[in-house]
View 1: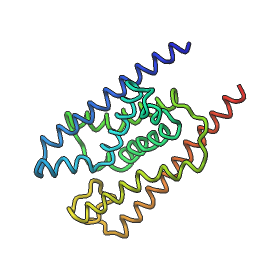
View 2 (view 1 turned 120 degrees about the vertical axis):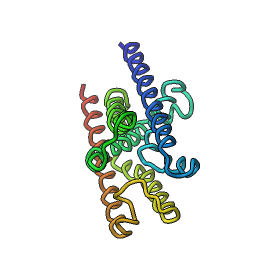
View 3 (view 1 turned 180 degrees about the vertical axis):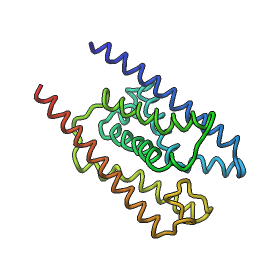
View 4 (view 1 turned 60 degrees about the horizontal axis):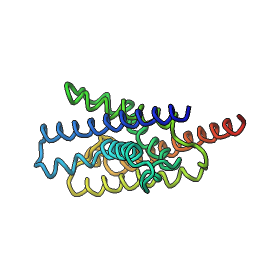
Length: 215
């Protein structure tokens, strides 16, 4: 049974890593192909999207767990703390896109493929991986606070760079259109959402741990 579970996990990791790297590569190709700025600026903008950065994090996690599970990084990515944090980050990608961003544009062709992979397929795949394979013991409510560091650093970077370049990757943090007061209010709302989602995942891990302890 253990061998079957290990094999299934390896297959899942291979499929997930392949799809994620493909989607990132496809999106990079498309943004370069359809660029409106110079290549260096386009590349910087590519890496300014929370979607891209988080999918890269997912791709690295899946790849390391597939190829080097016993390495230092493999041990890091296999921890309940790290896996749950990444799951929350990629879940936010799917939630924000499908609740807010999907309605404001209608991609076609390969751009539609990249969009659906990055914002729907990969978030669902990683959440499924977390549900089936991720260890869930040992998490406490206090873990929710350090998980906010990643979105905090991202927000600071985007606002700082936006003030210099005028480019903001998402409409709800576009200071040019909304002003700082509205953007900061939106950011606080997003952080509250991150925090509540973190509490939900921790609650799930606690429930699973209690169930396993009683069986």
